[in-house]
Length: 273
Image 1: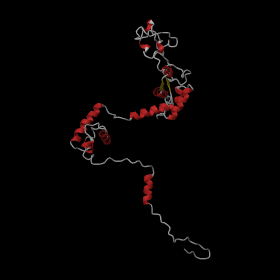
Image 2 (image 1 turned 90 degrees about the horizontal axis):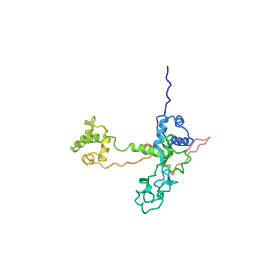
Image 3 (image 1 turned 30 degrees about the horizontal axis):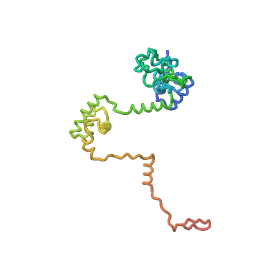
Image 4 (image 1 turned 135 degrees about the vertical axis):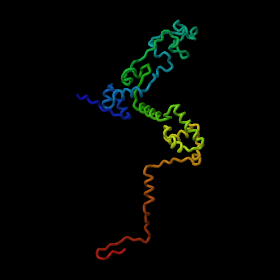
């Protein structure tokens, strides 16, 4: 009995076009399964993409209001002199509404404070793009925006390629192996040729580590490294080298002299220059 073949999914990274499509389909309340089938991805890929690159939007109305997320916020009548806020440092002297206070946060000592929350970010589609109360929601909510998600993806991709892909112990072992030999006067090419099996990186990486001052040894300890000037990187346009070579190897162009005259051809007589 032959088993049903599994669908082949595209293993490439999501592009900005894919993310724009995801954003449009989320507005149409399309399921992750339908979006994944169109993009030839697994539904879990779309789910991870939305949760990983969604944007946290803080409610602009809750800025400066400490207990804005309390369920009693709109009908709260607690004042500074009420017994429920007896632990307030301004209790004997303040008679202002606590939810309008800018000096003290009543959340830490109000007995009636009960935080409220929205469960939409915790269930699919994990964003509030289709919520009708998104503009006036008093909770911190999430939105999926394609261009913001693309920037987050590019930043994460760049950060993953930075730094050193070695642990502290492995880096210390490499330093203990390379630095004493450099300080003895051995060139780095000789060290790499002899201890190639013990060094987990290439020779170019060793030079980069020396430039970044990761090892105990420095560039000044390399006898040949300090003899040469630092090379200048010149950016050339595409085709400039080929054009220059073609111009140099081509035959020189002959210029026309002042005494040159065109050739005249006659049907009855011979031609004369």
